[in-house]
Amino acid sequence: MIKDTSGQDTVVKPSASKKLRMPVIIGTVGVLMSALVWASIGHDSSIRSIESKDLRLATVTRGTLVRDIATTGKIVAANAPILYSTEQGVVTLLSQPGDQVEPNQVVAQIDSPKLRSRFQQEQSVYAAMESDLERAKLDARREQLRVTQILDMAKVDLEAADRESRRGDQLIQNSLISRIDFEKGKDELRKANLMHQHAIQEVDLMRDTLTFELKNRALEVDRQALVVTELARQISALEVKAPVKGIIGNWLVEQKARIGASQPILTVVDLSAFEAELAVPESYADDLGIGMEVELSFGSVNVMGHLSSISPEVRNREVTARVRFNPEPSLSLRQNQRLSARVLLENRPNVLMVKRGDFLNRGGSTAFVMNQDMAVKTPVILGARSMSQVEIVDGGKEGDVWVVSGTEAFRNDEQIQIR
Image (tube, rainbow, N blue to C red; front, side, top):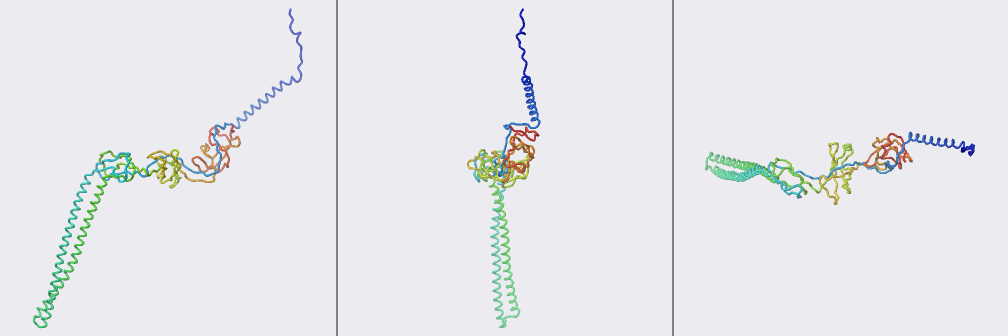
């Protein structure tokens, strides 16, 4: 029978150091695990961390802040007159939309038989009145001749009576005539003298009367001449002419349409003068002012202009403003061409400023400022704002770094560790 191996085994007694090694290792591991758990729990309960790649930072600088308004608009012709009909009639349009026209070029004609008939009638009246005036002049000359004859006869009678009176003086001295005949001769002299004086007055009165009558007739003829001239102008206005050099915009009536007086016919666009029409939000309406500089962007080309007019009314929560500018020769502008613009409200020199960021959406009273690797919520007071910059009145200093984007994940934390 085979025996077991108990006889081959040797009993070894453990030393004191070996007895203590295992508890020390277990205790150390336990302490380290507890420390790690505590640190993890304590860190999560006080400060969270966010990676820096999820944020956008900006440095506070000092410089000139340009307050501006970003908006869009379109190119409009500064001079695009609408041509109207002057009389009722049938219109014939001679130029197509898009055709080039020169000043005073006839672009439409209006056929108005009623106006032409009236013009001919008034011309006939004018010719008749001219004839009447010439006839009145002849009658005046005839009347003038008649009263002149009367005056001449009165003068002859006066001379004859005077001669008879002198003869009577000589005869009465020699007692060759009676006293009655002598006195009769004196009466004839006085009578002739009166007739001569009356003839002179009648000639003067007739001259004034004829002058007055001829003047009235001449004024009537002149008045009728003005009527004929006005009708001639209206006849000439039946040919509608382009007031400026440009192109035909749109027809506002159909070809050969019957139109009324003062009805729009077509538009002429002056290509030599353009303006920009901007749509500015009504919240900035009170900040706008005539003469403010405006930067217009046509792709890669920027042109400076100034506000020339501001609409007094608000439409669709926008205010319409016009910008006058001198286009670059390289620009090819078209009616209703879209553009972007920047209205420069004011320049504020030597101010602290930082790029616009999420802190504006959070009310603008606090911002996260970097302190080494920590983003700390800091009370701030902001001032003027531009399209890209914000003025810092209080709560910041030059060289500070602010978190301007990505703060949505900060929630209501007072500080965040950035790693």
